[in-house]
Image (cartoon, rainbow, N blue to C red; front, side, top):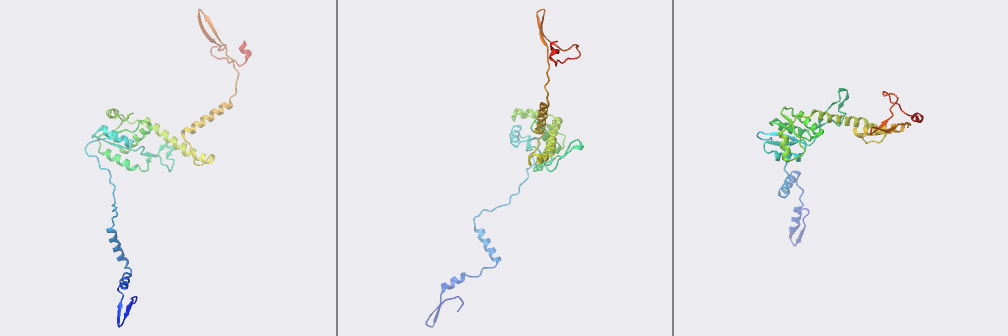
Length: 289
């Protein structure tokens, strides 16, 4: 008799319980790992779970045909301006500034006439490369950031990155078809004076922020920062308050009168005994004389 099988003896015959044999057949040892992998694969193939495919991001295609390039700050403005200008233009947005001083250090060389070390802003190198690629195939390039000094700085940084001569500056106060087409029809040049103004503002921000803020951390509270405007304004207030406290009142007198001659009335004021030197009346007795 096999081990684990039950048997019933009737007379000289032995009857094996078939049900017991079937149950024992199910309790076979598990197959090897290789076989289990195959069985799992079959189960997965029969399931209705969605298949996940790898997606590769493709770079934007190069514009085809002849075109002029317009660079603006805002992506929303880019769509509107593209609609107004038509198929002969390509419009791309810089999404604000593309370069700035590094955050890890001062970035301003005071000994070299306040030279600035400008680096691409984190995450903007792709945008710079895209603008340069589109500018490479453009007939004319129109830089249309905002007309303030920050916009002028953005235009200069883009022009430096492109490095071509066919670059024009355009400004407009309203995003309308008339204003945009009028600006494109009457382009100007980059405003270097306004760019210098922006650089001065940025250098002052960095010098005051990076030089005075550590002093405030030590003397007042850690984490606060000093700014170029509030720092100067605070000094003016303090100096004015010192002048008020140091003021000493002095008594003085003036002599004024009204004289009429030949029907004409006019005012007179005492100046002094000689016309070349004013005499200050600080004593009441002198005024009464």
